[in-house]
Image 1: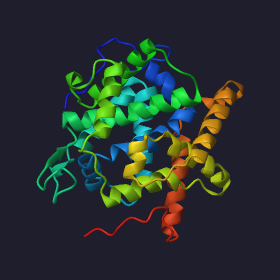
Image 2: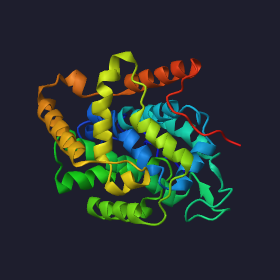
Image 3: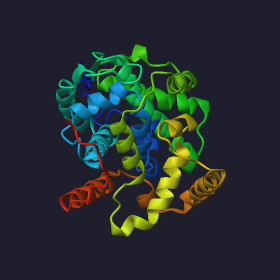
Image 4: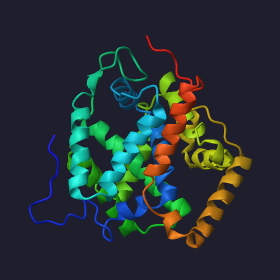
Length: 302
């Protein structure tokens, strides 16, 4: 995999420069950073090759919040770090991705036994950034403000560049935000989408059983309402999630209230990296697991 490196003498401000990158501005909102990863995981797992390939080669298969934390912190280093910091992360990921290759041991949905998967498969790389980009834009527009067509095109171009840093060929990506949305909707509606039982349990647990710790328990209902309301109906169907008109009204009111209160929030609370919050969740998961009460009950593996 070829990584994009900064030419000699070029700015050290990072691959997504402050004041220029729409992706950096969007991800700088904590309301985005604290929510987009869980939604992306829920949707991304609908491609069984994506989920199985990741799970089979993860050091943290039995610690899904740890796995999500590690990934999210790596992403933040690339979003906000210097090029040197980002390149260190990319080198680590390159080594990890080199081991993510195999084939499905049995039929999974539309994919027959023997179907191959690889972290370097351009189609799967596109799907991985697609679910993250769609979730990022979704929460920004719901909880902060709407973006215009030009902003959305620039935002998507940043995400394509993000994918290129990991080795994704740019030519596999849709050329505009509108084309991306059409691709995304088409994928969700396709027969390729299928959940394994482990993916269902992991996705549901990561989304709705996040170990906030005692201080954050009161926020769980609001958090779960926002995650549930953000999901396209077809995704809720795959996860067997019921969604009522009353829940939809509560969701709309909650998002509206949060959006109105955003300008009143101190900048240090509303914007910035979320790494410390991610670490708190991973720490809470570790404590629960050590006490014999893991936040998610995953099926035993053969």
